[in-house]
Length: 251
Image (cartoon, rainbow, N blue to C red):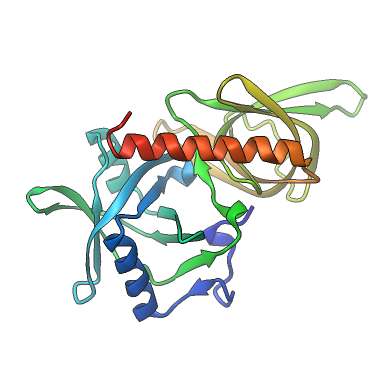
């Protein structure tokens, strides 16, 4: 499961041209393209859009979050991610900070024009955050050294057709990169559960605002059956529709 941080600076997917970046963001603005804004390692997200771009001021103005609490979380973040699918191409970029501003007399957020962005044409790289209000779980069935089994329950933060992002609040999962877990259950909405094989691709210890530390993992699907992949893709499409409906005021 590739993310913006995993794409090297010299990758053909990464765009450094200032003119090209500004042109792409401007085109997205003109078409009212919706973007996912992600903070706290992707565990929290909102749907936003680009309101204005000022190349001379090195700034991009975006819609503010719908709640004061979410806006404060964004303003306090030192790393903010953005993701969108534009013309069937996945666009991702990161910025360090956001600042309050007004646009046409209403609250908005201002960020710097990103130094680079990533364009990926493979649809499976698009990652979408799962609902915060109704947390979903990813449960690992792990074999102990004595041959017995134990289960480790984690929170599902985001999902793509390539893998998942999870949070291990109790820090029970082995953090060894490359380890494969053969028996993992993914919860999806509508009480659907699918069984997958996951490989640990990334692990970071994250300190929450409460002071508690948790482990966040990026996991890749291994040998995923077509029927399971199809179910996951339907789930992703459903989440996209729900988030777009909320952003447009239809939900």
